[in-house]
Amino acid sequence: MVDMTNKRLSVAPMIDWTTTDYRYFARLFNPHTYLYTEMISTGALIHGNRARHLRFDTLEHPLVLQLGGADIDEMTQCAEFAQQYGYDEVNINVGCPSDRVQHNKIGACLMAEPQTVADLVKNMQAAVDIPVTVKHRIGIDDFDSYEFMVDFVQTVAAAGCTRFIVHARTAWLQGLSPKQNREIPPLRYDDVYRLKQDFPELDIEINGGIDTIEDIRTHLQHIDGVMIGRAFYHNPYLLAEANSLWNEETPETIPKRSEILAQLYPYLEEQLAKGEALPTMTRHYLGLFQGLMGARKWRQALSGKPQLTIDDIKRAADEVLLLNPDA
Image 1 (tube, rainbow, N blue to C red):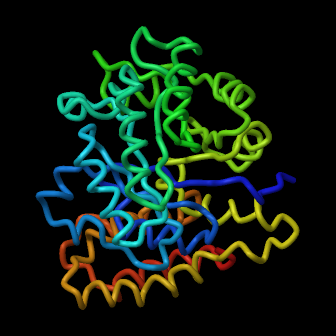
Image 2 (cartoon, rainbow, N blue to C red; image 1 turned 60 degrees about the horizontal axis):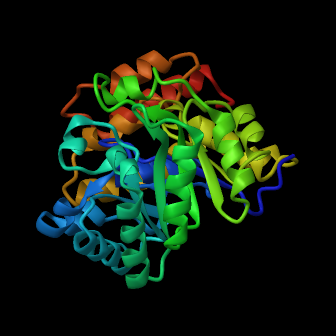
Image 3 (tube, rainbow, N blue to C red; image 1 turned 135 degrees about the vertical axis):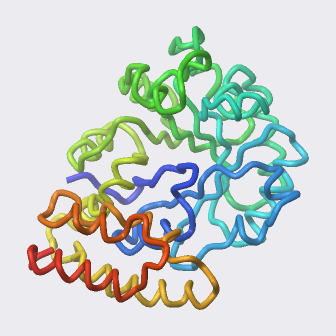
């Protein structure tokens, strides 16, 4: 059994997916995991609807705001927003390879400018009391040697960053889509393990290609944390099963899907009363019954129905639970 006292399990930031509605849903499965916002640009917070971008339910804690940006003043201002709104941590995105992000000279391309990232960390940390962390790749394009990553981490750590979340793939900035960048560049877990060995004073968290509880256990024998994105999103019950990492001897701590739904319905009622549209919330729940009888019917019941009601959701859930009474 892994001692989880100083370990961390996180749900990765995912654009369009890790909204407050998804995060509330995810929290119902597991009280221990760190939840992340989707990446939010500094421009969106400074010039857009800040309150809407930063809203969250208190149940979501511990919660991290991930920022996309490279301007020191703007990033510092947004770190201050994070603290003012009650976030537990702020994270700098140095891993996203999309063309749009590159065009703004943020995301993964910042790995080529470690001093810029270091300056961001230094100024942001001086402005807030919450931790400032960095999520990055093991390299970019031809700059993919272990030594390149070490130079990046060393430079940024010298500015005061103590937690690095490492996507264990190189980002190929030319010729691959973000989806391909999550699949084609080979995984190099050993480089992340080696980073922890070389920097034992830092908290090193690993990300990329991890999709089972056994995978999590294996990685936590080597490093301080594991971050999972799509596997948790598409099969949210994996989050519930991950409770066994903290309570291996008490499987009753793993909530049933029926219990999660019972907690979810009041939230849906509350959000509807605030004017939220039900389909914008239920799109995150399609994987609830993944792998069980009736899962496809559940997805069909929730998909593409602008007039969907909570009673519709309850009926669809009851049908699946009838087929899977222990779910």
